[in-house]
Length: 435
Image (cartoon, rainbow, N blue to C red; front, side, top):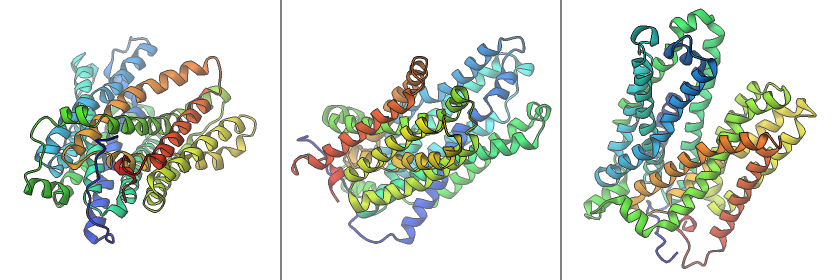
């Protein structure tokens, strides 16, 4: 860790009105962008019927549809690295605004696309293109937003800033589930297939453009402005410098991102279908409340990072997530009445995603921070986000309790990373421990 970077941020000071504006607009934009990205999966069945031939086998239609959804994830690393490259060279604000524009436009266009009955196989090809653009946008938005807010606030509020932003991103998933449920209860199947499926995409596009407009009022981060004034910007390829000088930070950031993917993908996205298929338990309402508690948990865990340190907070939330999920998955099959309170506790534990950016964003120096964070986060998310559902689903075939073991393993990883942050010699610590 001899080359461990030092974190650059404004000196300690109270949150200003400008900081609150930055956090509010960033969280709002993040919520809308995640809504735009995730809404596809809520209408996957309808889209599958409209964008592929009617005589296609149902299983193949769904494979094709979810393949198009996955195309967005595959585009994240490349899009994120390219946008981060220019974010480190040209400025955070430009890429922060561009990312939400790149998400809003294809989302709006999805809501206007002709279906298979109108243009044949060109319809799914255009849908794939829109998903690739969305993936590239979200690959730049998430790390870009983390960098943007943490370079605006003071050192003592970095955790709260990251936790607030993470809560906004999770709120986008909640908004998607609520709008999906409202539309499906308000429209018949015929109306949904005819036109109503377009409504959530058009809503997302319109509000996304509103967020683009609002972000015009944000200012460039003080940290980047100072780098530019001192002519201290990176003079080569930022990604080359990251891979040659900061592999320790890359490994750390990828490790905590793995925890994030497991917490979200298994605990929130997969668990309702797992409980339904394994035990016949409907967890849809409990899942909504769990997401509400994730939003709350993100803010609280971020605040704790500022008060207790990232290492201690990471260990606390890792233990909470591992134990609560284990208890829920071993209690609910025999006692379904405990689902709601236990799932809410799990949701609060999933608030560990508010700790992850706090750890990762501080481990890279300002000159390559955007690129280092984007590379680590997007590559790890592409690998583990794609690997996790396959691994968990395969293990369930031999042991139904495998999701609990998977989360427990990630909780152990979180504890080990937290211990490393606490026990690293003071002269070699990563900047996470610098307050």
